[in-house]
Length: 273
Ligand SMILES: Nc1ncnc2c1ncn2[C@@H]1O[C@H](COP(=O)(O)OP(=O)(O)O)[C@@H](O)[C@H]1O
Ligand SMILES: [Mg+2]
Ligand SMILES: [Zn+2]
Image 1: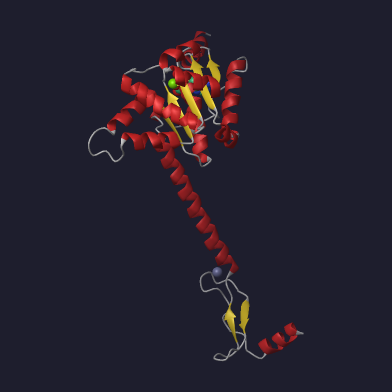
Image 2: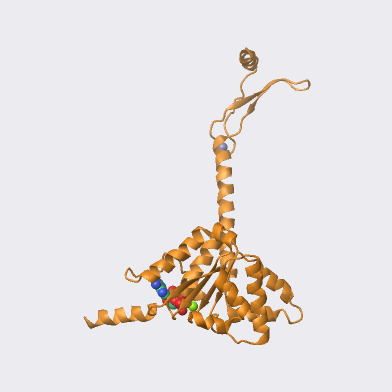
């Protein structure tokens, strides 16, 4: 009944001549406006569905591009060296005859896929083994994937971390050493690379202790990488840290021949035949 009276009312008001969208020229549905105390009943040009969808699409595109840009900036800030900028899980080749490699690859992929769980559990991983087998490659793939998923992640060489902390001792630094260390402790996933190459001064040991102990207490996922054996860990870190590593850490051994040496070997073989 109401609809009928509405129809009758709207029929008595002439339709506007131009009911096309001024922006795109497409026809738009008119909208009837009832008379009020101050205005007569009239037809209004309705919104253009096409243009509305177009505006929404553009807004999403801008949002997507801004998000991409932010991710790219974060990846840059994550300290990835030029040589590792393009590395991913996809361009890491797993030798089908190398079970240890396949297992490590799977563990690191799962670490990314189940990161919510690892954030909760405060998982630590220890990547140990020979040189040139892709430890830094895979750890880089881990942090890039985590950043893309919206987490904070960074890869630093242990010595680089000492230098960064020590730079705050100089006058004019934006952060104090304590503030910087607090920031490093707060990162969702910290990768400390080349833990075997260290200078071992008293200050260095103290910085390592503060950061690793802080991350242990706050249960923050941490990956330690070294070209060394398990028992050498005890020479690298103080006893208290070694205990924490053994308590929450999972060890992934990378003991096979260097990828580059293997590639070169294959090339030489190919040249022979
Ligand atoms: N299985 C692999 N597939 C593809 N590239 C690899 C593989 N293993 C190593 N590399 C490449 O070889 C080089 C050395 O690897 P890197 O990650 O630096 O070794 P590590 O940190 O174990 O010493 C890098 O350029 C890396 O991308
Ligand atoms: Mg490395
Ligand atoms: Zn339009």
